[in-house]
Image 1 (cartoon, rainbow, N blue to C red):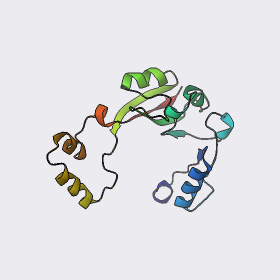
Image 2: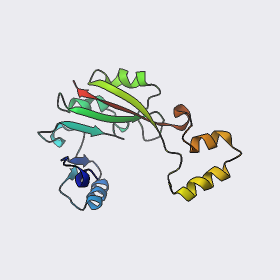
Image 3: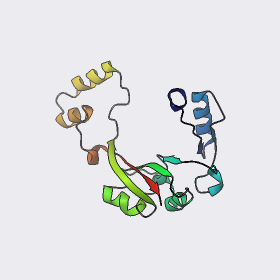
Image 4: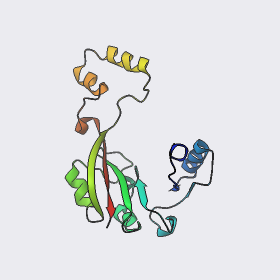
Length: 164
């Protein structure tokens, strides 16, 4: 979508060959994505202005070491979860915890929360069916309508700032 609707030039890397293949197939090109290791400075191009790091930091033992690989002054857009998983080495319950961990590496300018979607099939018929089926379950009904509590539903902390 970025490549079709904007003039933004970007590259990406992942440790997973399957993820690279899927992204390349989706965009119809294999020139944007490559296999890389976020823990190795050599995985990063020599020139870039922005890092987008979502669904990554919580999986790494040395997440702070990864951030050390990023170029000073680069704009950083990152996400970390507020829910636990067997695949996570850490998760965060408050904005203060996120700032405490990453604020010494990134000058965090903005930090917001995004709730996990309750329904993954977003067709209108599925939405109304879920409303009807859950009409006697007020808590679930509120969640479906997007009124659920971030701490109960789960989601992500999104933070934006500049690498120090």
